[in-house]
Image 1: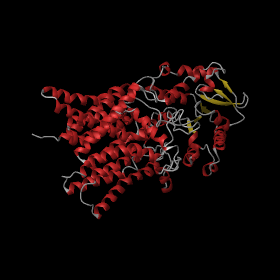
Image 2 (image 1 turned 90 degrees about the vertical axis):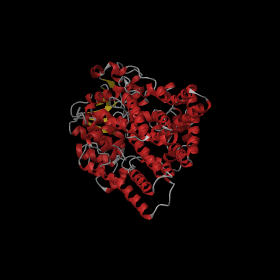
Image 3 (image 1 turned 60 degrees about the vertical axis):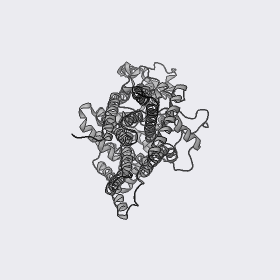
Length: 610
């Protein structure tokens, strides 16, 4: 009879449980922020924003083919569902050797239902696949460092580590967060030979070579072609994210205690965000966070007692995945952090960045599961008879706290959240006359539109121009080459935002292409387009008009009524308390067509009518 390894059994059970949890709560359609852009890239083999993540794009394209019967959006989202579930299985396979199969399954479920981990698992994002690669890196290191491992086996697992490290650049650099812990796992054994090190370098370069996918994709001429990396210089610009003002290690963007405090804020969301789905702490939620912190420390001590190598590695994982990430990224505080503490006028991140710390939070969940196992073992030893069995299982059931507490807020199927991105994207596109040009303000009024146009061929006649991207030469070059909406002089030398917007407006007029502006774009940017024009609100877009005084806003009531009739009433139903601020903001824009008078405060407060 074939006897399967206990670690494999624990891993498979954990992966199946997590897969069922994630599948039951995964987004059924588009979501806000980067997911729509990434789905577009996966479906069309395009290049998303830097660093381009070419390996993720190929995996997303494969997922789209394998799960094609679920629809073009869900098919790509399934990559995150599967990757996160398998990552939990890999974690359970590691833990089984240290705390037993039951404890390993409990720990994997606890880690996999931490708020940020669960969120990444249910939409099309790079962080789920990065978590799987990180888990594989840790598992390879753990196998390489076992005292009883034959030397040939040790070399093979270290070679696997080197290859996964090389994949960090074409997949996602967050994989490197796991590297210190993986090295600590693998440290045991004789000193590596020179030829071993040479082999590792060759394997890392082999993984790194997947970056060459980017120019191959660009050569195909996809519409989504961020950075257009057809030259070595352009390729390096994409990989190094030259498009963005990436902060260095010094000076700090804000005081170090602010950055660490922000990490603690996000940590407080992990175990039981559903009990108080708002940024500030609460008695019930924060009490559970403290208990989970104690369980993590207890689990870390248990693993250290099992083997110091394991304890050191897990401690490094927690440290590098939290404090290490905060130090390295040197981020501004999140949008919800620091009220009354951070000086007024401090720059904040555009969105909550808890997902950068997902590996640290996942490791915390594993350690907390080990802590619950330690409690179960103490109870089992101290209570005689059959009662010991029951008491030994009871603490492990506590591992379901994150699952139960976060279940409601982690469910992306909730209406109207599930329908908002598609609804507003469609309304924006339909508001533009045939062959028109639409100026948009950023991710959430651009990415879902790109998806509808490029994947589902909804209103491909509309030229969407994302204004914040005009500062990037590759984007201006694309507008000049593909749409003839900028002169060559504006491509080579950045003439500034105002001059570029005017050039776009002049070219659009010359081509008899109606110009429209998203209500999400600021009034200041509208004035930059043409200071002499007034603006007529037609629902979700403004049209330039010279029948109104310069800079003023008038309402086209007929167009407003038509736009309002096209919006499903269900999309305007109240959002849950835990809704992403982006969803709140975009739903508010859907109310702009309901304006009936210019004195309505909604015009200025929400629809940028000032």
